[in-house]
Image 1 (tube, rainbow, N blue to C red):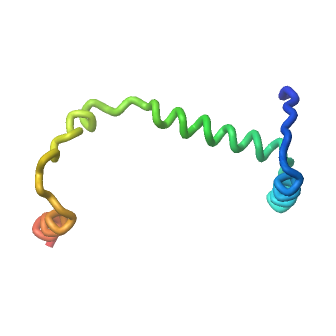
Image 2 (cartoon, rainbow, N blue to C red):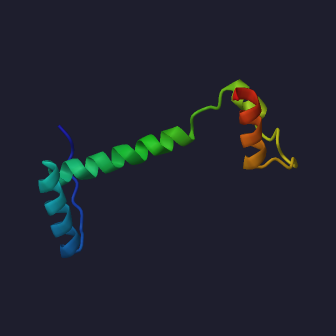
Length: 80
């Protein structure tokens, strides 16, 4: 079982949260927990280590004049 947390919010925000929770079939506590899980996942994604192959490509096109048009031409030549 989780620990209790008290939040102080504007009355209008509380109404919005309760209405949204009812529409979603969840409690406001569940909405808040889901929100923090999303934040945790986003934070951990930013800390994921880049694989060595991808890391070796970092900066390879720096100071190169390559456009989306060039890439489109490359794909046409390769596949058509």
